[in-house]
Length: 122
Length: 116
Image (cartoon, rainbow over all chains, first blue to last red; front, side):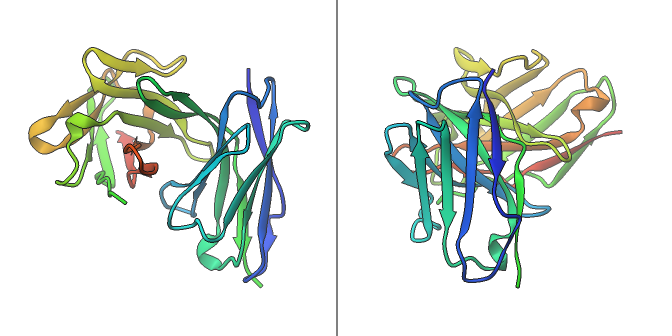
């Protein structure tokens, strides 16, 4: 059973870069898409972007200029970098596997990591 | 980026049914999209429940009880999550999602379901 675990600093200063890593266990990162989604405290979900194990990416247009998602298949990990952060970037950040059935087409996120709270504050 | 509208809250009693709605903007036809539903309990990540396109094209997430089902109301341009035989454990936030072709993932604002 695939499990995901986010890791990284819980506190980031304004204008700096938020960096998180998602470690995939119980299965290979290969042949799948992987995604980052965030949730500000008390608010709804916002998709950040996804990466295919080969390295191709797709980002939310509202964040695209600040986001980089990368993958390290040798470590079974993928990562998120969000630059020039502000208080508005304070959120629980989730990593999730994106399951895709291209012929349908179907796309859904399953499973999700437990999430990690990142606070942007000086 | 389209906006999916969900009522902030809904409530029902144990054993009853809950009907949660997800309304698409008027320029997007609900009949053209898969509507995905997620459940999120306090302190936990979202859990994938199901998708619904039509009665002949739908799918249940792994381990999701059959009392969770989807449908659409074309006249209201709305996707619907129906939970029958409500249980106290169904109290949670529920999010709908679409993925328009050549566009990007969109989540609704979520509905907090209270089981009275």
